[in-house]
Length: 126
Image (cartoon, helix red, strand yellow):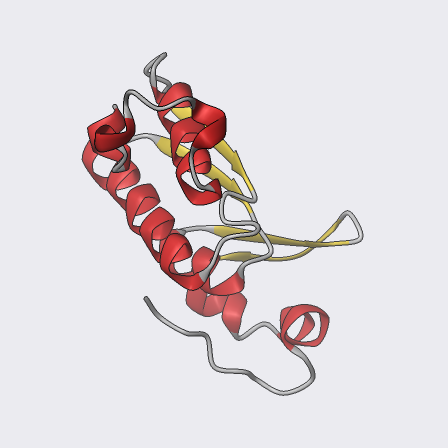
């Protein structure tokens, strides 16, 4: 599992001594240890720099595609969501604003107003 999440070389280190991004990868590995069919990730890239975020994005995609795990992703990182998810549900103050594939959600006027600003902002692709 440590190899799968990209931290095998750190196997002898104490978890608390790992850099923040690697600690988050370790948390994902721990969750995978029970071989879940569904994995809930709450803000998996919060506090990460761009490189760490890209690594986690690639990890999540790999888990989804290679292991066939259903992943529920709770995140405010719009590029992450748009690049990882097949189906998206957007909430605003606890109410569903939009749901559908990334393109449908990206073009929804309510989502644009609530999360992207009044004009369409380009969504970066990884």
